[in-house]
Image 1 (cartoon, rainbow, N blue to C red):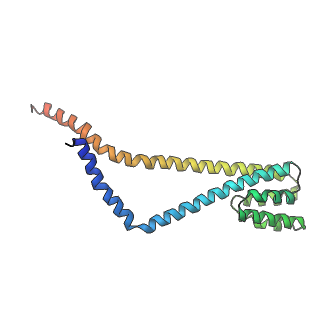
Image 2 (image 1 turned 120 degrees about the vertical axis):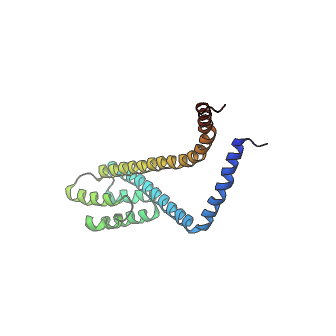
Image 3 (image 1 turned 135 degrees about the horizontal axis):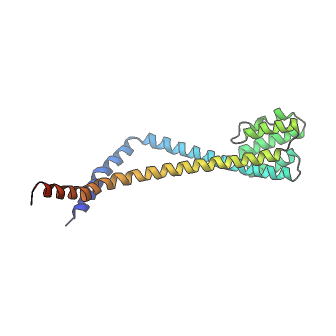
Length: 192
């Protein structure tokens, strides 16, 4: 014999799940689009993390006294393949004496490194240390990724709480509130 709670829960599951399954089956393109979007977003995050690691390594190399072209060559293996190629290109341009603005051009389109290129051109003119700029940029990249991860976690918490609330709210009303209201109505209305 099924209890009223089991009947309510079973009825909700029987009524809801076919609709969810049919809705997902009716729109497979939306699911594929979401998966592609998520994969590209994850790739962008890993690209920014590897850029931050490369910037930290660059700052350490420059603080140790390595020349900029040698430091860029040393940083290459820590970066993603496309960023490593851009850094090697900058190092080779700087080694042969190309101007700073032209030499740093390949790095400007890499994620998280555009500001490094601007700082490198500025430091080449002013003579300030590029290591502090690289270290600061790496810290800011990590902070922005951390803030974005916190936002996603908060959003996920809200999205996870909504279905639970939608499942338990009807049961709470039927099993908790409704008997109390009916009991009070019976006593106030004079029904024994």
